[in-house]
Length: 207
Image (tube, rainbow, N blue to C red; front, side):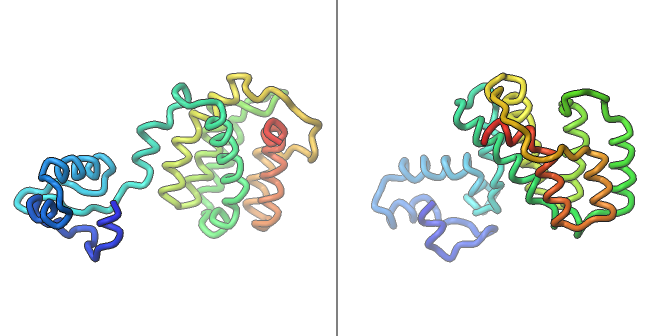
C-alpha cells in the first residue's frame, strides 16, 4: 500500500515482477505473493493475462459492502451509521436543487400519493422509495451506493428498540409532501431546514 502511494505507478500500470519486488524490498517471493494477494482482496490490483499484477481504480465502497451488515456490528457502530444517514440527508440539498428535473418531481408526487396514513411518520418500504429517490436525484453514484448500504442498518436500528428514548420535539414535523413542494418552489436553505424538521423525530433519538 505504501509502495503504491509513494511510487509513480498509476491505475492501468503493471507492477514489477515478483522477483524484482522481492529484491527491491529484501524479502522472499512468498512475502511478495502474500502482499499482492492482500492488495487484490482490497481491490487495488488485479491479475491481467500477459501483464501480471496491474494497479486498478479501487472501489472505495467494496470493503463496506463486505462488512456493513447490521447483525455483525456492535451497538456503537450501528448508532454512528444511523447518525451518518441523517447528516447526509440534511446536507444533500444543493445537489438536489442543481440536478432535479420535472420528471423527478412528478415521480416524487406519485410516491407521496401512495404514502401510508399513519400516526407515526415512519414506514420502511415507503421511506426506501422516497428517500432512495432523493439519493437518485443527487446524481452522485457513490452516495447512492452508500445509501443502499445505510438503509438496512438504519431500519435495523429503528426497529431494534436501541434508540427508544425520545425527547420533546424541537421543531414542527415537515411531511414528505412538504419536502417535494419545497424542492419544486423553495431554496436549498429552506429545504435543508425542512429536512431537519422532517427528521427531527429521528434526531431526538440520538441527541
